[in-house]
Image 1 (cartoon, helix red, strand yellow):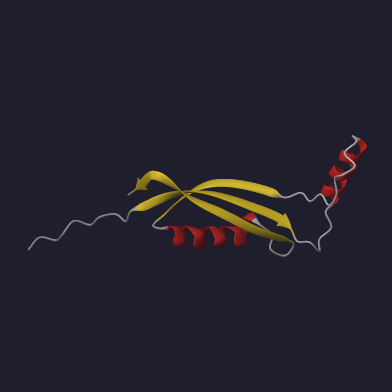
Image 2: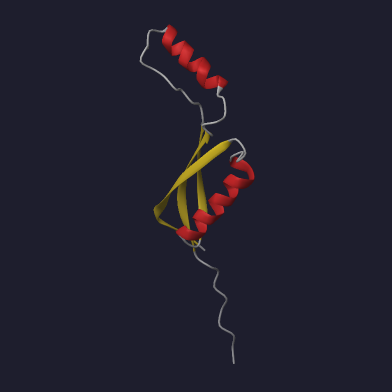
Length: 100
């Protein structure tokens, strides 16, 4: 009796957008400097400037739930300093992007 061939697990590709921002309780000197600069340029209506990070990546995972779990772990371990930063992300499936 012959063994059935082993098929590699299928993965889908996801485009991920990660937004990392300072927690509201953390001072933001860069945001203060940008706000001051904008006001010096005559943009008096600008207030409460906060500077953050925006990260994009493509992730291969079996499904969106797994991709979300992996992305959450990546943010906790490397992409955000969770002591002083918050993060959120968006995941979009790339059409027709299935890998084996």
